[in-house]
Length: 205
Length: 163
Image 1 (cartoon, rainbow over the protein chains, first blue to last red):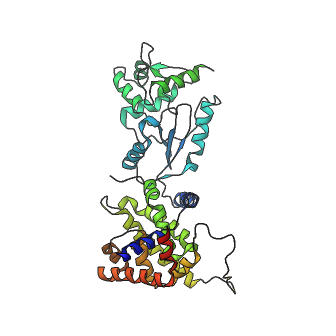
Image 2 (cartoon, chains in turn blue, brown; image 1 turned 45 degrees about the vertical axis):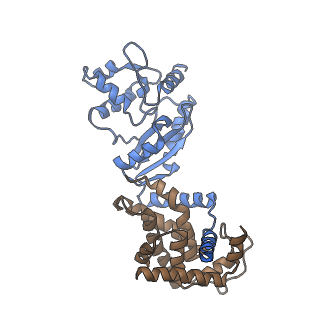
């Protein structure tokens, strides 16, 4: 009986305290090492914004995902792990440029994003639509039907809606600029409140 | 389903560091930790989903610690006299230097068995796999290690009892 108690004592003693500072220093070192070794398949960070906390993720090819808090960031990362690679690490450095441009956008100092994008999460028609979304200029809007015509498939209004709803790069790829033909909002991946915030931000210039 | 590697670091980072400290001492533990997780991230996509992640990490840490020891033996520091006195500034998180001295004095197999059993909480079967040898030998190494540690570091019992 004593032995068991003493074993526990020893376990407690050997389990030396590891403070958060030490772990974050080691984590930072790991971020640099895996980047150098070309192992950082997906780097991510989170930033605060007027539309809540945003997750930003990038592959070596470019920015691959922007996610609203409502999408559940843990879930989003799990999905990235399945679709892209489980070699995912919180490594903010790769996202510095994207974070800066998004900050500038919300500060109204930027109207066009100048970022390399990785659209590999989208395929086919959705990807085609998402590729054309940046053609809608800052402060302008289009209807789902306009977009369908723009990509040369005027009947695919619903499919355009799906393409907007599954946009992996909201804000940066401006699906918020697409509205219903009657001018009502339609849906939005970040919620209607976020869509309104973005449209008001852009309209107020 | 396989978790993002970030979760692996978050869940097991502290334990792996503690294990490295016991096996190598506080000085070299950081390097072994870094090598372990770099190596683990490389191999992670091939790890079976059913694998015990902690046992897998400790196995990698075990090999990295052996590498660190080997390098240290081959390249002794080019210093005439290594100062034994503490630097005053200390090693962050290094805790009790008497404890480290006692741990350091253990035969390496006992030290490893103690770390893998009492810090990582691995089963003796898993420890036997890492150390080579039988499950019974792993159990004995951990028990002997603990006994020797208590002998050299009697403070453990009083400290534990008073808390």
